[in-house]
Length: 375
Ligand code: SF4
Image (cartoon, rainbow, N blue to C red; front, side, top):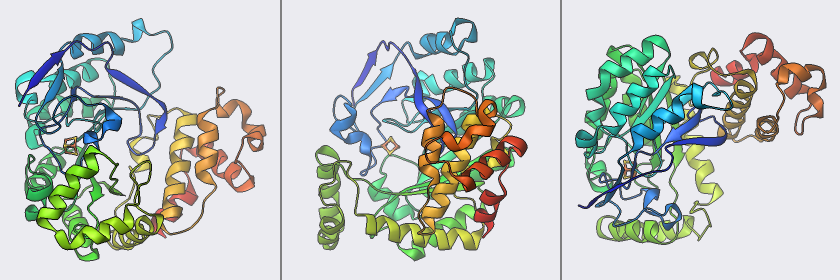
């Protein structure tokens, strides 16, 4: 393992628009590279320019806290922050991978998030996050904390093959229980399911059932991508060793797509399976509106709710105009409240979308969204 310490120029990443998966406008990568070394990790792909041997080497942004303090200080900002969850995690390195024990960048970043009064959403696979319960609780009391864990399934044996450097799913589930008992909102990212291995209806149902037993507040689901190059080569090597009979199946669904995506038919089929399972367990497949409706400003709230509606419709195998409308709204400079009478001028907004938007602006809620979630 090689650790490289670097001086970063910036830490906080501002997304081009609000991210409706995480309900976040800002995120950060404190480390580049990840010794968790998940076989499917897309951080391994050349597309992300992570230096060194992925899974072995880690780059540490040694001055991260100093920079972040400047970036989070509202007095130093020309434009005010848009309220949303600050996202810690995801990207090209788990914020709670083993090296965090020594550098404590995630802990110190949380201290700043607390000091500057932001809500936070942390996504990890590591039980080390329990160490920071004191700060996560403080943030939760003043603003809000969401702790999410990612899983490809709840099968410890399969995880040992594909997620060799992380605590097994059974430990992650126990950690979710720990956070729930501390009054923290928790999510499961069932992402990615591994084709023909963890995407079977039986294993997916077992995973959702166990998530339901620990009372997760939501489950976000997604399939796997395999980008040509390092990511696909590494994955194929492991597949060949452990599941040689699946090689042809993989060739059929991963057909050299630029983004490493599998075929639409494959994703549709796992979406339908997932949809039927979460309906049975009554778990929302997106972060529930109650957790952010008092946080986001109007335009962002409308974008997130429309994108969630769009997702729910597609999950049911239906088409939807709401994603396009949400994108158009995300590009607006003026507040929706100031153009309430002219909403139909916005690309993608027709009569039905207009009435959904007006209801959100008035009540910070959407009866259509609620109906889709329960229907
Ligand atoms: S924990 Fe996340 S970032 Fe780290 S190797 Fe696994 S998938 Fe990649």
